[in-house]
Amino acid sequence: MKKSFIVFSIFCISQTLPAQTNKISPDDLPIMEQLEDTLGLLGFLIINDSLPEHRFGATKKMIPTLVKALKIKNSFSYPFEQLRTVSILYPPDSTFRVFTWQLYVDVDDYRYYGAIQMNTSELKLFPLIDRSRQVESEEYDILSPDQWYGALYYNIKQFDTPNGKDYLLFGFNGYSLFNKKKLIDVLHFENGNAQFGAPVFIQEDSETGAQTIRNRIVKEYSAEGTFQMNYDATFEKIIFDHLVEMGGSYNQGLAAVPDGTYEGYILKDGKWVWEEKVFHEILEEAPRPEPILDGRKLDIFGKSN
Image (cartoon, rainbow, N blue to C red; front, side, top):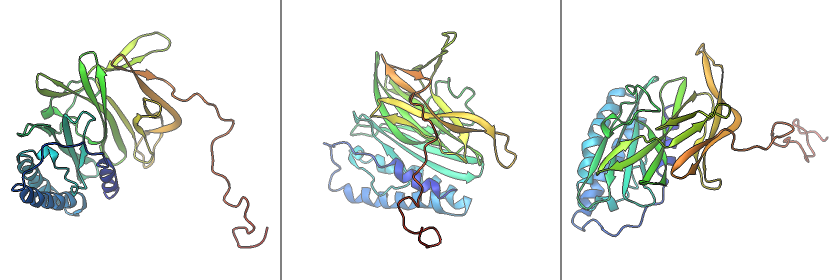
């Protein structure tokens, strides 16, 4: 199970890097490259080492090494292309970038680490402290960087509000053996400070008209299923699987699994408004691939039809 997160992490960092104007000096570049090599090795150990104490040790070393690298003048221009196990995301305006990575502790224990680096020549950094297990109201609390709802971020979406720009962060949280979580958090900057969560997700009851306003979206789903949640640029919407509860395996109780339909949110006047059903097409039968023997001259035993 742990190995699958390597692929997930590599997917996370496949971002287009912004154009840079302020470069690291020739004197600092060899130092940065050496630190990058160290970070790459530590990142590999965090994901791949079989001993928990080694993974912890690599994580403990990773944090000060990354900070040391980021303290180098104009470090924002350095892409860290060898840091394959860390997600590094940039918004389109390139005002900051966010680093996140995951530490697997045990089957029911995942911890997350990260930092937000602002696009300045001298380092301005917001360390992210994972408090996801302590958040009392996960979809409604406003959180500071030291109360961060930890996640491995896989996408970022910049959007306009009446008060300026905010940013959606799409993330994964390993949570437990049987259940995983995905979330959409909102990163907001006010008076030079970062905060997570903003009242931008609006859901209206179709029968009563009552509105529910959330500061973030958190979806828990069965680890046996595949749950998709992301921004779709073609439809210009957030789209995610609709979940229903059914009996889980191994006496785990009820488990949330996709039912084949999709919900979503669409941006209207700086708010993300819920759509109960994104696609309205109705199929006469469930979609399925063409039979593998169609058009073939031999059956599965190699005999002529």
